[in-house]
Length: 274
Image 1 (cartoon, one colour):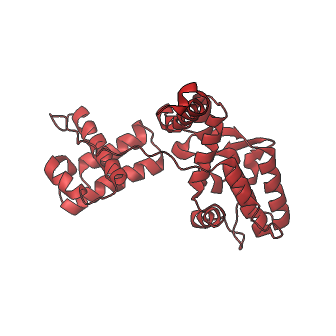
Image 2: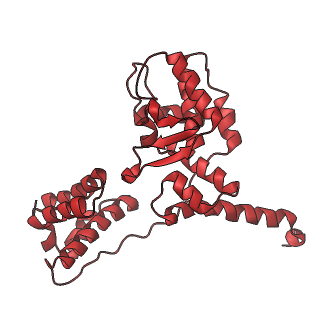
Image 3: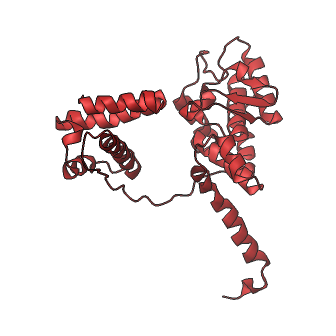
């Protein structure tokens, strides 16, 4: 590892106080470039870097790595390691609307779950919980029994290590209590597998895929979409989701626009004219 890269990683870890996961991501992106090209990153020209990174067909992955490189270049310029400031242009990504399920679709799917066993009660409670709280699956699986206090959920293992408190619907809380009572073992983790160990992300994915045909993250989108459709303020939704920037939450405003469009199409007197 070059001395400049080592200094950059120390800067974002100590001075910027980024999370350990963020630092690890920067380290992985940047160190892999130095190791593949066997040269200090600071000495690489833009053409060489772009040729190396061009094999990433996923534009989001490519942009993440380009952003890591740009952050490093910016640091080197400010520290006067380089006299000129460099910035690689990010790839354009078309905006994709988040996939979501309606309340009716989720409830209808829940009726398919056999809740006579504790495993079935767990699957039922997990889906309800994800839709009722909008938590990321990583946050959900890290929860302990003490993180639910009355009608409030304390999310301690949040992205960016930013804790937050969100309300939890009574129906979801009751489902969790019934599942834990049926499990009848004292475990700190709320979500466990058939062995009693903490449930894995892969297992959680299989559960939502089995009953809903989607990933757990779609339930987070469904939670946000339901709130926006119900008239919730965008900044409130931002806080509930734990988004650092309001720009991230604004992807859900398409719901409001679609509702307005449908209202005009149905109600306006000129709707019959083409």
